[in-house]
Image (cartoon, rainbow, N blue to C red; front, side):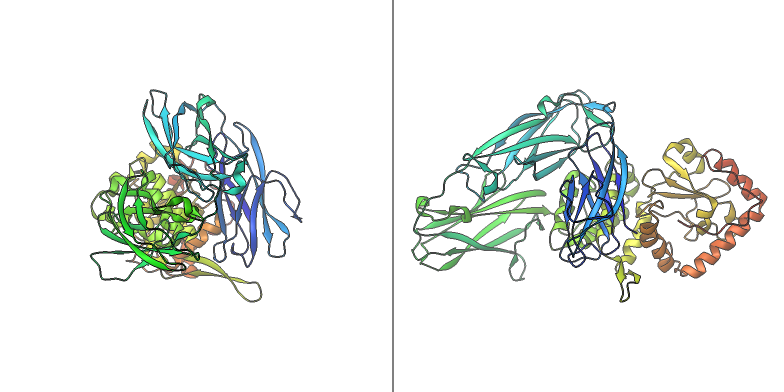
Length: 600
């Protein structure tokens, strides 16, 4: 059944998740739109909407995730509707949900622009990618929230966004934005952009809105006719210390930051006139020249190769600029195709990061770049998994779980699990569906045990009970196996329900593979998702590699037997009731029949 779920509300935004009955791809859908208008069960058009997402050409995921960043005000309740456009052009209601934005009584912060500067040199032509450096200051003495800086055109279309970590009191930091100049943005020879600073954490409100927006105007250079046209046809790369052949240089790919890279730039003269001598140059995002290769003129319709050598001595994301610089620029017919920008993440391509880097904004930018490259969500997920395993083997996992970036890491890991298509429902002839759990998911399944973060004892959990929810015994039945298992109590973290703890009759944390609590990639409140990614995978593989999964029939039978044991043991029931009262669970009604197992 399709549905819409709204979450992570701030004073002016929220996240959305749409679950569709069929995979979100071009075979089934064209687009989804989120709107505040009720168009009924179906409609021929959806003209007003606050967010949308185009269907990819292929894919097996039923989930569509995104954010609503505009049109919401603080302290207001909104009912929103998700509509999916089917292949026949009709819009069908996928679900509705209601959410209330945070009011302005949250923690106040005061971020503002100190300066906004375009560091790309003039002239500016249509098709150019420009670099905007926005210096942001925290004007309060106390630390503020994580934040993002956005740039939008005159129609409000989002062009680029840069996520940054929280600013300490009176601190400043640069955000970098890279919009591309488009013809439809031009008005009277200028393009106008608006930059906006927004909090990226819930519970914060801006104390002074007068300096968190900035508008810039860019004068566009008129084109000119000429005789030749030098253009960059393609860019390839290889490492000089390896014998492998050249590969295409893709946007958002990851290259080794400590390796010498040889770029092969194919330059073409596409006209009937010979070009002048020229130089091919590569610049870093600060405009510093990294290398150049001078070449003689190109004959008409000819092409040749230039070679550039670059070694980056530090980790991070760089927007490299490859440019052909003719000796006589005024004669180039189309100077806009002389320049190619590539966003490259220079990092440790072997993994093994310092654990303090995991979950930071810089780290998540690398992960997002991997996800948007040919590696896809699956490649990005395996990248994060390798770092998590390294963190554990190096003995830093406990420290990482206490860091402020651990939740950011988990949130992205969960998102990639859902988008990796390693677990999906396959539509069979006749309209029935079957769940496919690929063997590749096995390692991801067991990785949940590294992500689980719970108090070491029941007393510790009770001391922070505002963060935890006790589950009814019917939902703890999978964790009541063996002698005295009927005394076990099960808890999940509030809000997300990702973290899960089980404690025995003495209040000790249960860590045995038979009954342990495990991390949920999807919380139990989302029954369909929880069954797909957490329950069915448990049936298949068990909690750890030491104990094989028994399958749904055997596991449900064992859970049913555990409930019978529990209902017949007065001491176990009293133990359950004594803690259930503290967490608001109803008393056990002994007059009712023994209930069925409800593991989710």
